[in-house]
Image (tube, helix red, strand yellow):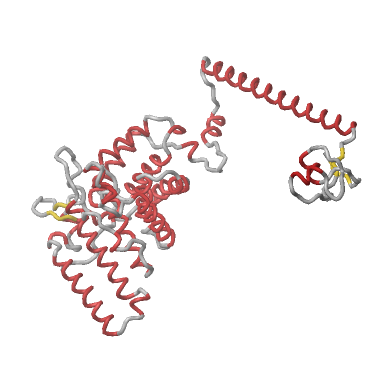
Length: 415
């Protein structure tokens, strides 16, 4: 109904309540009964012209008719689609080379073609690279539980590319990229350009779905993918990408409670141990990048109470108990490389606090000197704990799994 400025007889009370007004002055009977003022301020309702009402009714009917037609077309389209799928299923698919290429390179709504074509190299090639990774990188810094990784690889290869879990696919590509870095170098030419290109190719695949890994539902595997990416990126000349990524990684690790012992007490020993390993590797990278860039680390030592690698739980039926342990080729000496690396990262954090932090700048000369002496003492103590067989000068020739080849040497020579 439209409003009109014409005068009306009914008062506001009778008008709004739609009751008959006797029009008495100064107050009508209803206003007296309701003990309210008798006013005449609201405008009268005006009926729409008959022609306008007919027009609106006609439009409403047209809308209903269009909605019914749309519903009918949708139903027919669904029936046609089901019929086409049934007919294609009974016929041998015929695809030209060009059509197959276009289908494999299908771009989804987000512009990401990788998720729709999550391809992997042949299985025999994949298993060779996984074996290289497990025997080198993962043997000293155990980012993945070996049996779990092999199971994920098997499950991923059992699915068609478009049916694969993107996070699992990303984890496998991280392993491939790290494995490419461990292929023995040519004695004359060093690492080949082909190896470098392969590492970059696998890393680019992971980076293409980084939003899925970081913004999707967070599980331990997501953190492992991100930590593996930082391992790869931290070898570049520009440390900005790895610095940004380790910050996001530590935040997500905190979201899962990896830094807290209490958050893992209900888990089985294998899972609890792997969660601790992942956060300690992230911790190592965080402290390394902090010292190399002279920027503060993300993880505070006071906000972490996870067991050290030497005290992590083990099980008799698990073949992953010795991960992080390095042994000389003759088997006469062994060392917990992982634990030594964690302890060195803790010292690196103290170096930053003593030399580069804002707090260090504001300290007195004597306070800075005492802090430096404390760090030097801790470093000497750490160096003394490293067996002579594992000094940086001879570690590449004396150890069976050669952590130095992975670019993971302890970095300080005992000699």
